[in-house]
Length: 141
Image (cartoon, rainbow, N blue to C red; front, side):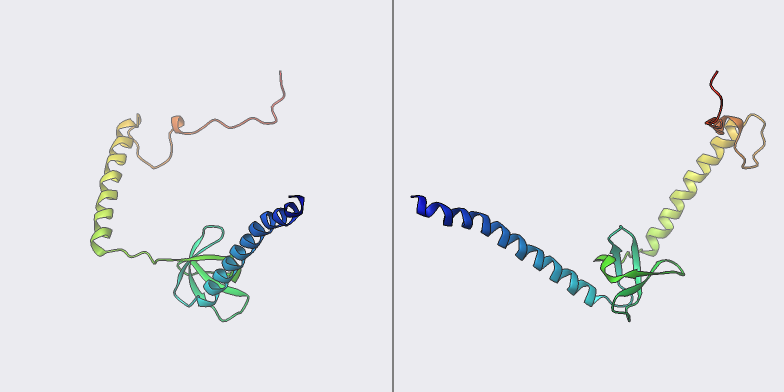
């Protein structure tokens, strides 16, 4: 019985190690395929959660990403976590969302002018809206 214990113990320890290494190798291979398949115009998410559009993929180690209109940044290719589907907006959705925003702006403006005791509406916060300053260096009494 003792002669089967050592081989059985080795087998129990070796199988999880083998499966873990295989899983890690597969993940590395998928990441390399993703980085090699990137092309200009792809929407991607970086490892830090930043969504961007690929602008240039000519370098082997870095990639040019546009994170906002006209704002280009350079990233390492390894920072790209995944491709994401491009956001598509219908013209109807844009007009509906603008109408909803306008309605909420009207209610905010009417509540601001109603709550203003002076009747002035210059856009500056009133005393009730300004927080008092913090006094960190005030001597203790």
